[in-house]
Image: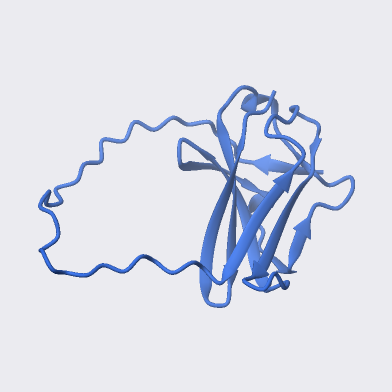
Length: 141
């Protein structure tokens, strides 16, 4: 049975500030828009509102720009307000080619303490010397 581990729902009050300059860019300086990533990571699940203690199947796909499967590593965690509060499968790193999904009977089960919390399931994928993070909003019920 796979469970979201160490879901210590901690609310952080961050007082981080920035002392960055508020001046604009110098006139005449060209800026380039970032190029789109050659790797595509998608997350698919049946719902954004899974029941607590019930199986929640999820699929993570990793493809290149031509939509071909890509060899990658995957780890997953849970975020609350952008801060990590839990790990899926104790932070296990999976090696995948194209698609990762839970085995039948081993799906993620959200603990009772997560009920009503606005969480984000995050997939961290490393492929072709790039690391990409994708999230899926979840509010267990």
